[in-house]
Image (cartoon, rainbow, N blue to C red; front, side, top):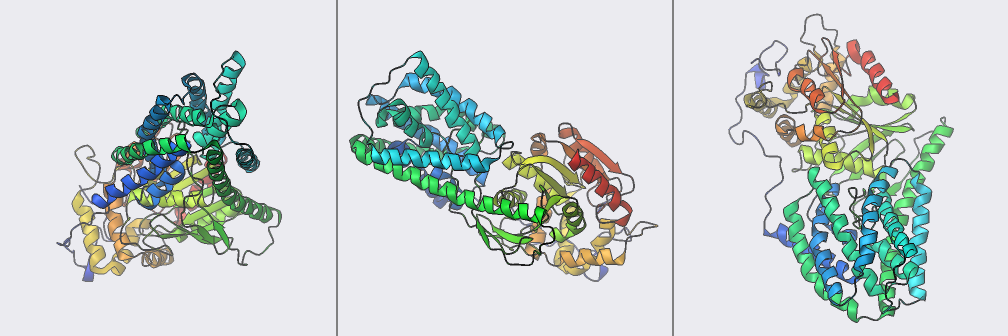
Length: 620
């Protein structure tokens, strides 16, 4: 088949001096996947699990308050993957801990049976309410609730030996408790023992030990439900969870015995201290969110105010809620580096591996987040950012790692990490009800983001000349392009990337077609942006966009999706891309632009049509 990566004259993309360059022999392709795990990795997981086991046995919490940030920080898991994997670890720890409490008569099976169904149902309800309720005042009410319980535990020591008395009214109250615990988990990412234990003690006069044992038993079905949900979404690293869970189960037993021997007064003080620590974490998260909302409101009310002043905001990354039905204790801050916003209009987010991701943030209103194509930067979207911000929307775009104003790490140039970087920006800015727009590789980034992180913060998606589901030709994907096409890209990039980018701008915008009106300025802009991308990041990204299959990610789309593609796309041919994606994504809308090139959003012949379709879709 003829390659879609032709030079302006229809020949293969040239190397130095216009000669066709063979693929480099060492190496022909660089692997951009994660390195294999050694003993140190598994030892780290075991240590993380051991910490979680102590918390589980001593306080009857799932361990997520520490386990999730540790899995992200030390095991380098994505945020949602860390939360989902911690659920696997919670199950054996909770089972062993609750069995130990049960052996000492410190579990009310009847109460657990009443609380558990409500907790699972409440978590589902909370995750749905998350996108619909104004959380600012709810968050402060929840903080006040936690502080009040902490104060009560400090003032009045829990009593031991109190039996659990069940009446019809008490049974209904236990069901209501489960709904409250689950809903709080879905809304705030905190559940399980951190809420159930103090409520069982103060609201039901249950012994502190029985409250802990019962809460642990409740967490087992909740964590199982969350694990099943996450497993279907491909978020769970089962092996990592089992390693951490085995260690957690081992350390939870001595922790339970420690809980059994300490005095009720000391138990109350320790749990109160834990509650106050959680309250402080929630306050740290709540204050910056309110400051950003205040800035946005002022921007809308006072459009004449200059945005050139320095605005330094340290925003702790917002921890996503756990998958529906988990009831797991997730952190509200994760000991992670924060976003530093130098101006209202731009800033950086530091990811879990220390890479800084630059973003630009224009306007106020409903967020529309743009992901750019290879080998460009966020500036490729400037026309669209200006349009959306001028139309009453908050338009955001980031430079992908490896280029532009973002960091250029040696590792992590793959679609999984690109998606996690996008998640870091979305979470740091605390965006909700967002529209995600991805062009080319950016479309693959959006697809993998939804596959890995879900749509709790997403309302709609737009894929423009996008790479999904798979560019590489395989037996199952005969419409794709042969591997030697991409090897040729790598060869030309390595030989003379400056000339390569100049040549590539022709087919990218359709400038090599008869009658083209593409300006030299647009082609020069392509070259300029491409040259800001580091060679390592650009080289690795070829493997990422050509060999990553996003079919399973597309199947997880559950929001309205618009697919736009030109039928003369010489970079990402429509037959292996948009036509297939439209069949995979449920209820997707496909718009084919006759004669349009790959970079249709920037070419004058198609830009106005694209802008109208984009605005109409966002408003619909």
